Amino acid sequence: MAKDPVRVLVTGAAGQIGYALVPMIARGVMLGADQPVILHMLDIPPAAEALNGVKMELVDAAFPLLKGVVATTDVVEACKGVNIAVMVGGFPRKEGMERKDVMSKNVSIYKSQASSLEAHAAANCKVLVVANPANTNALILKEFAPSIPEKNISCLTRLDHNRALGQVSERLSVQVSDVKNVIIWGNHSSTQYPDVTHATVKTSAGDKAAKELVADDAWLNGEFISTVQQRGAAIIKARKFSSALSAASSACDHIRDWVVGTPEGTWVSMGVYSDGSYDVPAGLIYSFPVTCKNGEWSIVQGLSIDDFSRNKLVKTAEELSEEKALAYSCLV
Image (cartoon, rainbow, N blue to C red; front, side, top):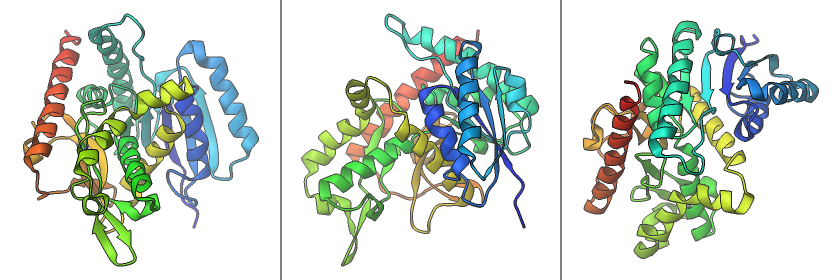
C-alpha cells in the first residue's frame, strides 16, 4: 500500500544548501525510497525568481517520489501542514557586524517562522535548525512555538559528527562506514568538542577502540579537534562558499536517523534540549550523543567523562549560555 506524502519544509531553499538539499529529499535520501514527499520551499522576496527556477528544475528532474512543490515567499503558506521543517534560511554575519547585530536579525527571523509553524504546521512536526547560530536559533524557535514539543526541535551538529568520522577514517585508512560513535558535544561553533573517547572501528578482529588504533593522543587532543572545529572555515577558504553539499547530506542523515532510527549499538550527534545530562545546564540546545527509535531521540547515558573532556564540555556550555543571554536581550 502506497504511503501518504510527507510535507517537508526547506527555508532558504534558493540558497546553496537549499539547492543541494531539495533534490536529495525528492530522491528519497532523507526519508527513504518508498516515501513520497511534497516539498515546501520558502525564501525571501528578493530570491523569488531564483526560487521559481529551483521549482522548475525539480519538475524537470521528474522525481517519482515528488508529489508536489510549494515555492513561496509567504511564511504562512510555506508552513501549512508541514510534517518536517528544515530551517536553512538565516541572516549571515557580514563584515563589520557585531555578534549582537547578527543575533538580533536571526531572533527576528526565527520568532516569525516559529510563530507560523506554531499556527500552521502539522501536529507533531519535527524541526531541524541548520542556520547559524544553529543552537540558539533553535532555542528561540522553541520559545515561540510552545505547542511543538521540545523533543521535536533540534539543531544540526551531524555535519560536525560526520566530519569527525571522516577525519578518523582518513587517519586510519579505513572505510568511514567502519567508524562509529564519535561525539560532538555542545555548540555548532569553534568551541564544539569532537570526542573520540568512546568511538570504535570495525576490524577483521572485531570492533576496536579508535583511540587505541590511532595511538596518538597529541593528534587526537590537538589537530583532530581543531580540524573538525575549523573545517567550515577551511572549506570557505578553498571553495569561496560555505559548506553546502556536506551540510545538505548531513541534514538528510539527521532527519533519516531521527525518523527511521539509529542502528543498534550506534549513536549520532544531535543538538537537543538539555535536561541536565552530563551536568550540562538545562535549558540550552546542546549537542549530545543520542540514539533514535520510533521517531524519538534519547541521550546516551552513563558515558565516562575525563577531566580533559569535562573542561571542553564546560567551555562550550558557557558559550551557549552567553549566546542565550544575548538572544534574549534582543527580545526586549
